[in-house]
Image (cartoon, rainbow, N blue to C red; front, side):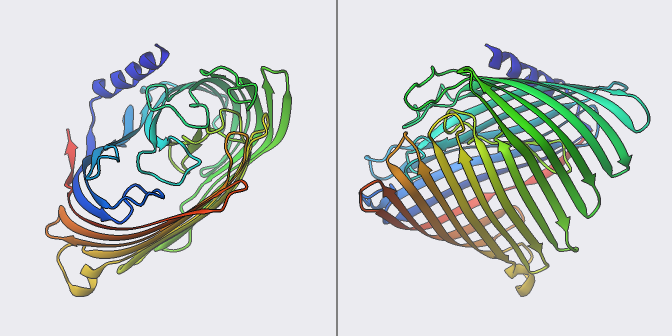
Length: 449
């Protein structure tokens, strides 16, 4: 009932808004693929799959009373082998911001639907998905004390719902509700520099009952007190938090940890940028984008049905030259369920390089060739599974040939390798080679009123 009310508020804001300008894009796509291991399992089922769907985005960031950014995906995959179930894909992410004129009030609404592994202790992606929906409303009010000082008041309701999807395997589904309120004092040091002192308290209640064996589904309260320094410069964006977090569970256990968060982005020159992230403390379902009001949803924050104490390092590098673009990412996350005997280490690297053939050959449209490499490693120490480590790596080569400004044909070659290590059992290696051939139609435009 509460989720329905929150979603109705988001929908009402969306349909009642008279946009000054809306940027839109949609993509119709279809592809057929052949794989020597279509199911990505030890059975090595060979066959074909047909995939089709649509992606879309609507963005209004004109700076009026109401602004939003949205994106979505709907699609389906049909497999030639009956032993593999057809798979339906869907997703949506929307940030909606309402700021009435001549008021100190702001309302932020978030709706996110994503697909996560049904059993995250295995490596295959085929027939291993479930939906997680996150709905949130955050009203805020500020009170100006001077030209440089103000008080901020925020309240948030967040509902995480996975109950309508496939039942999770070897874990709780993570459905829960979070109520949070915060108070802060903010001082504007300069046009690009501010300092805040923030107090925040939240209460998290899981839908599933408490599991005494695995200590999952433990309701808890959390209190955070920290200082925040923000720089919003032309070449430098920085957000630094430092303080203390305290969690008290319904089992009357109290845990206190340091709260540290460093987000930094540096525009090195016209074509290159570097981003650094360091986080320490309890995990959050929301991560804020630097320099924007948008929120990224962390659908993996409830994986153990428990509060997570984490330490995260991440590095992102981007380059965008006339003939060449590239992106390199690396992350390392240590997760410890401070209230149960479960822990996990997540490591990953992602490389993507694109060479613009059209610039070299003088072609009218953006034909390009792209190479990508991805590697992820998960190490488990958990009562929920006998799996101790999973590793997946994927090599991809794409050729995107544009036959018009909005339409392109693509060819993709993929080599995927995975290894699973189970306690007191030899490792299981699963490899697959896949060829994709497809077409996409992707127009875009702008509506102005």
